[in-house]
Length: 377
Image 1 (cartoon, one colour):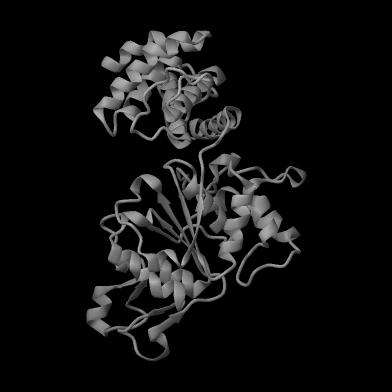
Image 2 (cartoon, rainbow, N blue to C red):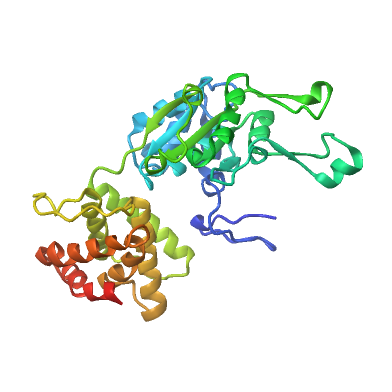
């Protein structure tokens, strides 16, 4: 089975399957291949790229035609890569929607050429989903053996010398989190059901762990001090300025709309109103003067949510009316974002439209204000 990279406009071979979101190593296969071919810098053991080449892949290099993929502080990327070249794991923390998962995916694609060794943390995550499980039909028929062993991402990462991504680690129960202690210190997985050399899987060069945790879940299952000591912590902050965030949202939404079959690109004036609204609600300020600003909603008004709403605006406008989407669509799509955590957030959004947006100048801001009644439908 082959995978078509939709972002490059390729034509699939017979039998190819167009996936909704190919992994980073597929989306950027040409850039990774070019970087590997030109990379003459020293590489940490087990890495497919040097630190400098991996950095160029993530933050971009205009001189060689490598696009920027992570909008954030380049020094954060430097520290993250240096951490992963040591015996410490990397923990990315921050507000939801600040591209922690994207950064971990890009790093894994650059370092290991594979970003799919991923554990998704949650209340139902078990140790079997982290280390290994068993094919019970073979286990009953043949007994414990390497044939009946089903490796999970952590065992595969150690055996193959690759990075493993652990998403939302603080969503997991404490006993599941602490199953990582021996993996990150001794760098070995013991399989007591197997005897001899097969009962110990030692980590090969290149293995390490990138974990993510959002600050809103920090109190759900607080990590133990022992596990924290095995990670270096890096905080991923929201995008600081409007122009950078607007450019990122526009680029991401354009790609998503193309994949959704929407022909016209997003209206930049509508995007500017949408991103400005998200930034003001996120900060809880009423514009540049900061006076009389709106109540900050409990819902996450992140860049990722702005991309999601802008995508819905474009889909709504095109498939319902045959146009790119309007400020009125922004109000209609915002309702589901603002009201997901607390009904009071819908009232906060309504007050923002009535008290703050009414002061704004420009046709799209006026259209946003005129559509405030949609929040009551």
